[in-house]
Length: 89
Image (cartoon, rainbow, N blue to C red; front, side, top):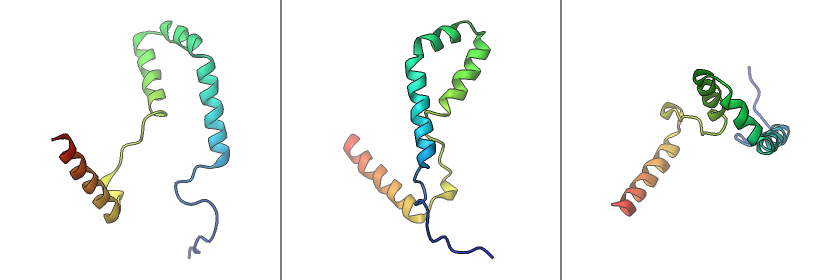
């Protein structure tokens, strides 16, 4: 039988160590953009595409599975879309 969670991070709060690592990696990449570009240019197109697709996964939001959303989250999305539709029409 599972016990009730009574402490720790709130769901969705990033681990502090993970955030520090992410920031360090961003800095490392930022400081080496020119070299990375040169390295990518030496690769065959298929290899370059594979690496770029792999990197894109780390900078784009993951796809949302609507089946895992709560009713409240779905209502918020519908409300947002209706409001946005009215302002762009």
